[in-house]
Image (cartoon, rainbow, N blue to C red; front, top):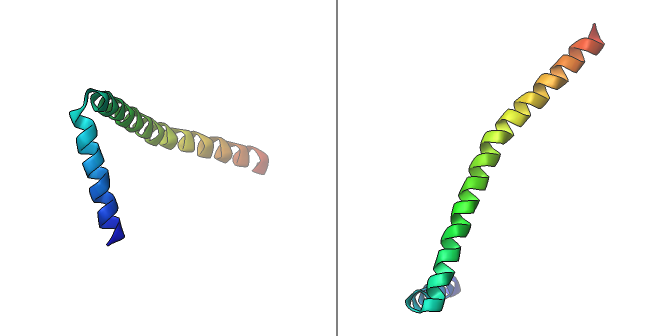
Length: 68
């Protein structure tokens, strides 16, 4: 029940902030932050897979070199 009140308060404050000019800047910054977060998550997901594959390849090569 308390969680519902918190969400309601948050949405009310967000609505009031969006109606003012100061709130407009806040919304713009929030959108920019969301876009940056999406780009970072996408980059880490893509590069993380490539980095993991590269490390596994190096480990395999080192294992084969020392095992021979």
